[in-house]
Image (cartoon, rainbow, N blue to C red):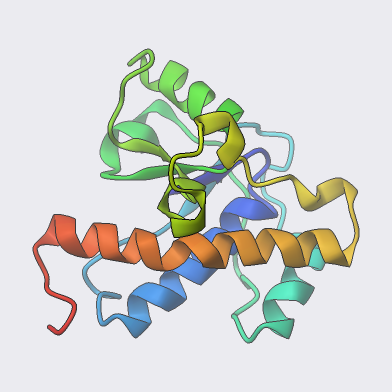
Length: 165
């Protein structure tokens, strides 16, 4: 599960990219991917129009049918991997789960980006494109794409599936 603030920009973009990458890796039927937000302010809203535009421009589905929803304690507890877009989201997820600081299932999304190796949790934030323009959404998508293969490789290893399977 990918998690951002309102579940209309970063987390649904990451959900769509990851779904595409898992399908390409032949693991589409082996994993379930969804997204949520730490806030309920966008509850029921579709993917932001600017996020939809950048996804379409890069050949991805645009999230038809997506409706924003707030993450719950059950969501966090039932997922094998919860990918936070910012350190603030990660802390909110840990608090929600009642697990304090250590929870191996809650990870920063960008921690899977090889270029971000060794960065602190605070340095791994994917900036919120909401207040920006098209370039901010393109940058957000680029950061999401940069970590996507690392997420796939991690899950493949967790499932015990070789890359040539």
